Amino acid sequence: MPNKPAGRKALRQTKKHAAANLIRKEAFRSAIKTTLKSKTVEEAMKMVIAAQKALDKAAKTGVIKKNTAARKLSRLMKKVHAMAKK
Image (cartoon, rainbow, N blue to C red; front, side, top):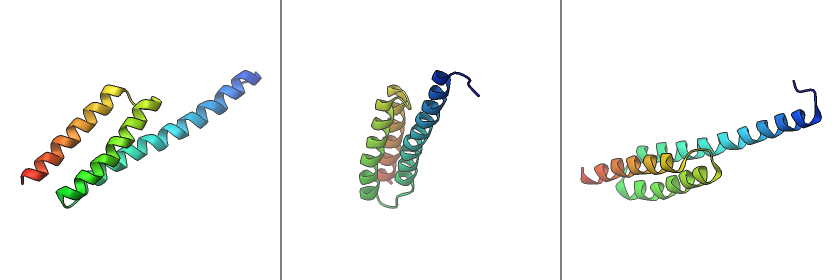
């Protein structure tokens, strides 16, 4: 436990930021999972938009790196296109 007021404030900020980061991370993970679980290709393409939005927001706020978001989106699109070919 920090002794100085600045240390206490830093601890409060860290907890608040960690909670916000967790919400962002859960948002893009659940969006990816729902996209992969969708039954039809049309439904999957709609869910891809939501997943892309969640990934971009996570990258913009620094939860994940920009290239990580791009890589995850690329792999997701690859799987969706594979679903379309079946």
